[in-house]
Image (cartoon, rainbow, N blue to C red; front, side):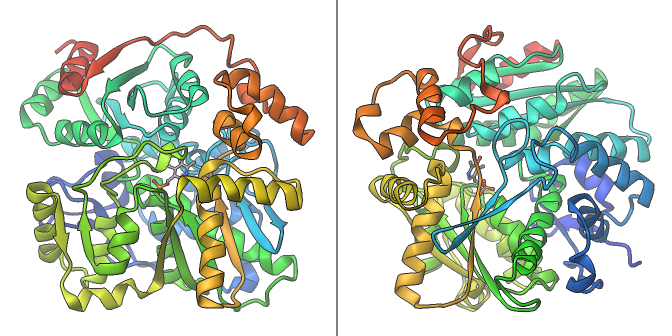
Length: 496
Ligand SMILES: *Cc1c(COP(=O)(O)O)cnc(C)c1O
């Protein structure tokens, strides 16, 4: 098998195996690691159709992680996709009202982040072992709500690691916040910041590039790594479920093997949908990747005009995990559509950091044809939840609702008859206040924990075990800091 290497989106000459890319998280020049070529699937879809989730994961991931042995990779996969998920299917497909929903929220924290973060700790530990790296790994994470808990769950009590999570104190649901602040494990640190997700993300990114801090850590036997989707070890496991979804749709007789389908993806940091783009490049028959934004519609505007502009008001919406104005992984797409040219990407990222915006060159626009950009207002989102519930007795969360709304709009404006799979990214139980209020105004009272019970009554399904007693669990993490104090907090934790 050909060896795959990873290089920076910003054009420096570093070329590393996947183990190094995973361990390091981010390239030395501040760029993101990308595979030097996207591997092409050699096994036929017919053959893949007979595999279960774990077997499929191996067939896909081995093409990206060519420096892992078969035993190493299979061990990681088996430890990750086990009874932590509440269904042996791992990611079930549900057809409701003519559309299929890929439910990616059956893991321990009830959001799709579990699909990658249940395996990342194993990949990371394995990578460290392969490279004879014996420093303590400090996972530094910014979260818009779901990554934080999924990363805490994945890394809690993992020997040789510490995990530090920064989240927007006023920008997540009560359930999300409580999930994080009640996290046990001696190696876990959870800190709220007086700022939004972009502030958290840029604070974390600047620590990754802070040479003085890195030096001080090195002297004390620490190294940083990332659990955010800037880490290629997060992206690769996400490619798997695009294949899985497609194959499930074939198995159900909805489509013929080889027929094209569309995916509608609720998008924030552009990690999930980028995994879909990789799946398409590998040979999965995908026609359009429908990129659904909430009112922070920076990506919609970008796909309309080729102009990216984060200089706008940040809107706090009911889909907080998508309240993002700087979508990190778009950098990887720019790299691929510019013909793997790091100098173009580097220049655009420089413009973004100096002026908050950039215009892509005309010739790059053609490369964006795989995508359709749409967005849902808060009203669209609420209406989608309500209508689907009334027609099908099926409850979706606020993020999935954004994608469902854009999916319906896409069908209407394009008349494209291609079957669509909506990527369902979180359980409605993570966002009980906004989901219940969308169904009926009388639920618009504040206590989310009481609403969990109302939701259970309404749907006839039990509250998921993962959050059943969330309202009464002791809060273990209470620190809140200003955005300018993030580095100080990290230094304090590490004794620097
Ligand atoms: C993180 C998240 C998203 C956005 O995914 P990206 O990979 O950041 O685009 C959407 N929905 C939910 C529930 C999430 O947690």
